[in-house]
Image 1: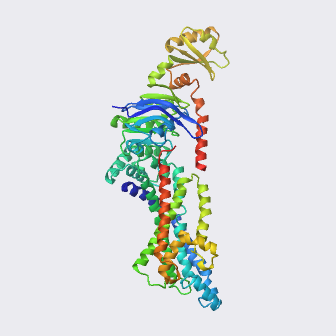
Image 2 (image 1 turned 30 degrees about the vertical axis):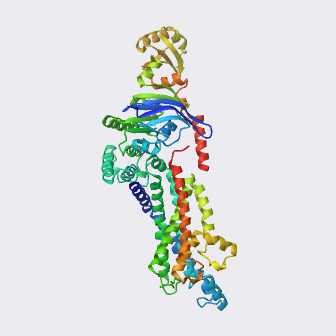
Image 3 (image 1 turned 45 degrees about the vertical axis):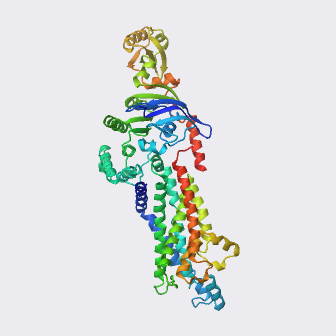
Length: 334
Length: 283
């Protein structure tokens, strides 16, 4: 049986010359949650748009649910659900009406549409607000409604394009809970794009790290962290103390040492073994230590390892992002 | 397809019903035209057609220009029916643009709903308003004739069932044609400001190159040539021929209706092509 989502050398170059996606290949297994992790402008939304048959690829091949994205757009749209990063619900309709209209758009008979709407209103904890206009909903309620709208036709494949963008941590955690519930009950195959590292870490079975339209690493969160290798010991010297980087770098087992924001990050194979050595070395060098912490490598380190850049530095619009926006503006003016 | 069409049409109608201010404004404009402009701008009185000071020659000239209508108000009121069928469709395309800006269109485009259902729902809901408004104006204009001291629409022909159907069809075709035109503009354009500028630039020329408001006979030849093919003229002539003696017109109403149907079919075709382009995969 073929995997539900397959991309082979998928490429998208916009008419203004921007190479948004550059020959990416991957496959998502049935029932898997696959994360596409990357900063703004990495090509995540362009990839989702191509795979959901909303954007024609420049070259390469994409198969979704065993169907070709270039030839079977309408059939693919029936088999997938999408939660877009922006709100697509109609603010002038109630939550219930939005779900009913969406159900009809996927061809559900009226009785089935009503049953499904009631079920989703309960599940998304929107039953009490079901008959309120959506423009009165909070951000979290709108996101839950978006998820309901995306799965109203019970699709086997769900695309989530930055689904928790703009939500507070509590709202994001709630959204993840719904996704986990849906996966465990219905065995949904989920393709998630996000630029939240913790979201990818929490929700995804496998992750592809994308940068400048290319996949730079793929694996389970644990595999990716293992590729970075070792733990990170963060040492905080007392205020006014000298920089202990040089003495720490000389310690046996120290893989790398990097001063950062008044602390020193020491990468090593075993954090537990390194802590007493590092504290002792600092004491010998006359550097008072205010605090020490040990961390397993995070996806932040993974991103740094594969792209050579700090993840948070990339959160502003990139050149690709700007080029895509300029093209969209030009298209709108036309 | 019918299920999607019904759901999307219901959505459009709910949105219209939840905006009573727009309905009220839509009603107010033709009421003001009939009660103020129609009563104040009294060409018949000036020309002596209704016993005013114009004299026999002026009266005769106006009677000829009005092509069988018994008074200027009667001529103008039928023109207003055509006029509101245009003005009430002006904002149908703006709703498409706002739906694109607010992401609602993205949801629809991401669904398998056929483009014919997406277009059809907007066409039905968009045309419902001008059709109802045009019938309201027609009824009100006839009603005014029964109020002492006010000008009203005086029907001087025997209106047959076929004639009534032709009047209804003319209103419907004109509404569908302009709804298709403005929906097409909504599908092409991305910014509301551009849309409103384009609609304003189009609205008055369409009206003023028709014989909706001023008599055919008063136009210079070049304007008459343009007005002959104007869809508003075609609709209004169909109605006038069925409400007043039709001998003054060179063609029977069926000819005007056929011309109007051709316009409507053309705009249908353009709009369907554009909606398919909008809903299909982007390049």
